[in-house]
Length: 160
Image (tube, rainbow, N blue to C red; front, side, top):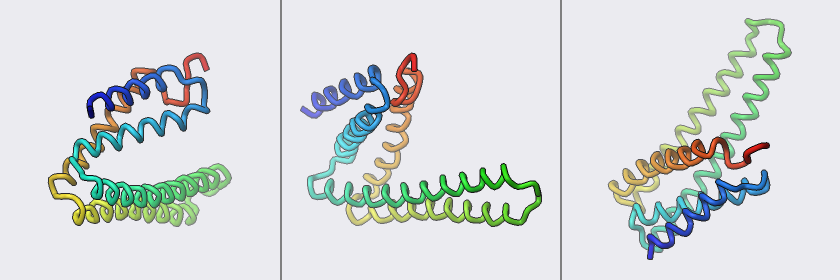
């Protein structure tokens, strides 16, 4: 049964990636990828319903925090880019302040990841945590491979 669900979602995912009709499908494709990822995580970690709910609630909280930090990082990089373009002084001390802010954000992202992984120990076994970490890399690689075979990102359709 699980394999049938996986195949159906995989087919829908591949169809969505192979035949997008513009940017409006980008969100839809991302949602399909996230659904597939959730199903595969549940299968890989063999979680029961209660553990699944706790895990995904905690993961959502972590992802929201990481998304916020990444937004701040992008804003800072935009600020840095604008400063580079407008500054005539290559040795301006403001550069160091911007670099320090960037380093602080990178450290906060690292700390958030560490905190999330550590927080899983009360709901997952050490083996499940290790499986999850390996799963994340493998899933990213699978998605990346599908996208590269297609020749671009999900929001790009051929000929556009």
